[in-house]
Image (cartoon, rainbow, N blue to C red; front, side):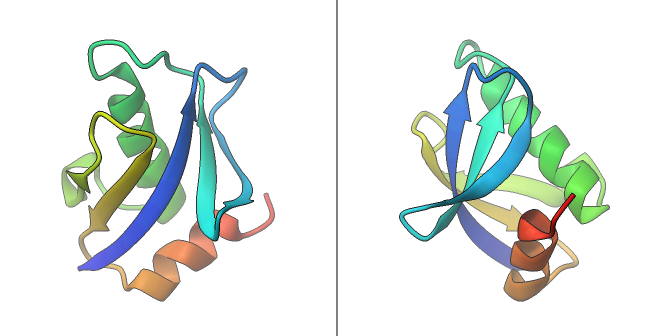
Length: 88
């Protein structure tokens, strides 16, 4: 299981990875930070980018903050980083 720490910015115009913030991938989320909507958007985005089912992704730490530690089953840490930071 791969693990990555990401920095999230909810309420953006679209959901995308926009580079690094303090050495962590910065992910802008279209969803607002209300009722877990941003966390659901993060899981959906990572599922799409990493090509794994949503059930393979778990927010391990930081569910209520902007910095989150996320586990992705079936990928290594390096594979997750490479897919997130690959040019679109």
